[in-house]
Length: 209
Image (cartoon, rainbow, N blue to C red; front, side):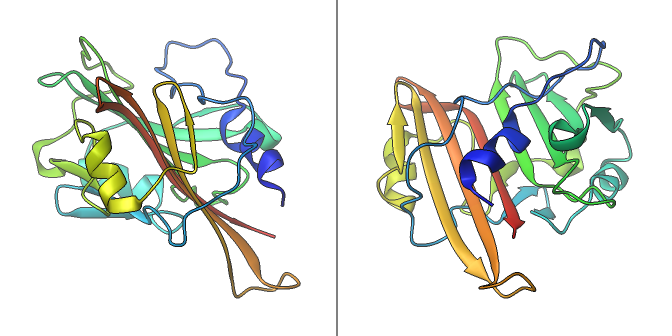
């Protein structure tokens, strides 16, 4: 599957009107740059001692660990998406744990995690406070909100693409599978920064024919 087409399935979501707090919209209209990393930037996210493995851990498993939360669904076909939302009011952060309706399968495996810093992030019914046992949070490489751009670059190398406050770290490779030549693997970590410090992070993984 071409990454430009895959992008719209991941981020080009048309949400219906609801009181639920939706994940932020994608930063770009399309992925038009090459994936330059030689290794995946992040295969998982860690919440406390609980590890979310992209494409393996399900939304139901995350909700079970948290003992709180609501799985919200919007859209259909390539625009279908399921998510859990959690708030950290003490630090003004919201976290979305997301499953692509098309790529996450019937089990709703996690394909993406987004976190964003806000001035305030008050809990709500559909975005409750993140339990203490699921804190602190980080990606597999220990990067998270508040990380400095220079530290991320030190860990991952030069970004694949940079546009204003956004930096993207993209990896594309192959893995064994029933498709001719194997499955395509796309793994990404995108960051938005203010004065060199990350205030939004978007990471995930998709495997496709």
